Amino acid sequence: MNKIKTYDDLLAEKLELESLLMAQKAIIRQDIVALKEELRPAAAVLKFVGKITARDRSNSLLNVGMSLATDVVLRNLVLAKSGWLTKLIIPFAAKTLGSSALIHSKAGGILSNLISRLTTKRAA
Figure 1 (cartoon, rainbow, N blue to C red):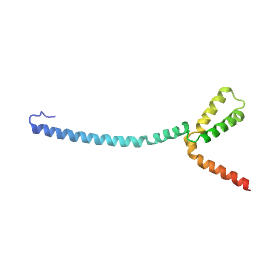
Figure 2 (cartoon, rainbow, N blue to C red; figure 1 turned 30 degrees about the horizontal axis):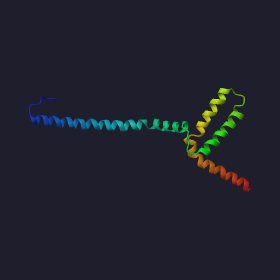
Figure 3 (cartoon, one colour; figure 1 turned 60 degrees about the vertical axis):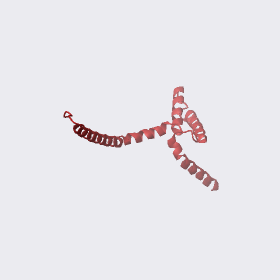
Figure 4 (spheres, one colour; figure 1 turned 120 degrees about the horizontal axis):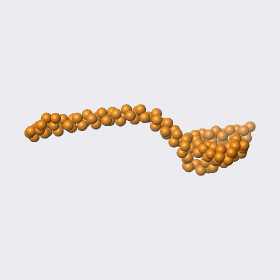
């Protein structure tokens, strides 16, 4: 930086600093775009894990049915000879997974498939 002696020197320095600022902003924008591209797979994994672990409360009938089925099958059949801690933790994890948004997003297709199979068996 040169010593500023006149008003013209000040204006020239201002223009130089503004152009430097614009160049640095462009570099930062490019870095942010590159960072977003690098983090896209991690964001997809986190979104998937979030769908699995978060309970979806939009369809309470489906939640109750899955909860009841999970309790009956796991506690009475699969974990019949297990300890109390196992009978407490595994059904809770299975209910959370079963009522997750991932399952709910596919529940319509599963239910329609189940209903169509039941109606075809009754008709036959």
